[in-house]
Image 1: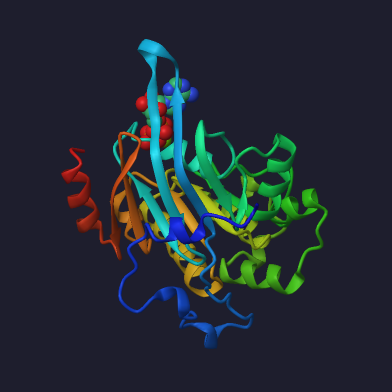
Image 2: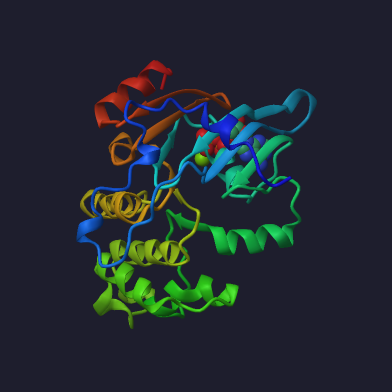
Amino acid sequence: MNIILEDEAASVRIVPAGDPLNESTEHAGSMTIPTVQKTTRTAVAARDITKTYGRDDTKVAALNNVTVAFRPGDFTAIMGPSGSGKSTLMHCLAGLDTVDSGQVAIDSTIITGMSDHELTILRRTHVGFIFQAFNLVPTLNARDNIVLPLELAGTKVDDAWFDHIVETLGLTDRLAHKPHELSGGQQQRVAVARALLTRPAVVFADEPTGALDSTTGAEVLELLATSAREMGQTIIMVTHDPHAASYADRVVLLKDGAIVGQLENPTADSVLNALAGLGE
Ligand code: ADP
Ligand code: MG
């Protein structure tokens, strides 16, 4: 019952020549910790999902039969005009909101129809979140913020993995600092570390650079791209910013609650052109 969608949903994706699903990442040699092998598993998939708000006259179809799949280790940006359904899609994919019809799966488990309690447990163990506003606990230092999701899940911290992430993110000498003692960029790096530490099936990032200056934002985006490339981390990022989207492997374009296109290996210019084509 829980073996799902993947084949169908994955086939929606246009796979470029030289199937990247069957290649290991190229940077394995530089890593102290083995990289995650990309597989044909689907990290996140949605089939025919619909979400409608309001009723009768005020009815809005926020998502209209959306089918999409995200492969392990891919960094995908979701873009589209304001009101196109980006936030709704992210919330439905992350199990933060329910769909009216269709199915969502995270790491091959169908989450549609799960109870709130089951969803909470699944999110703790399979999903990482990075928000525009960092969402760190102000009374906890950086280290305690980073390990909080594992503590909530009652899981032991993998010290080698913790050290690796903290080092990669340049946080080693900031671990004893509380959020207010850190810059915005450092706080977002703590949030990135927190999201990565559980080795989630997917990290959802909602405008992760929205509160950062462009230099700091670029650093955070580079770190997200690196965690996809070198740690095999699946990332789904909602953004308004074509430059931010250019760090992703793929851009999925939404309009009026439907997927209207996608770009592989996006550049800021190709994203701008695609958005212009949507009338934004
Ligand atoms: P985006 O993130 O792309 O700006 P959203 O997913 O927030 O778009 O919204 C998609 C559509 O659904 C919009 O028309 C929005 O007004 C509507 N919508 C979103 N959330 C709600 C809600 N809680 N109640 C009513 N309408 C909503
Ligand atoms: Mg939104």
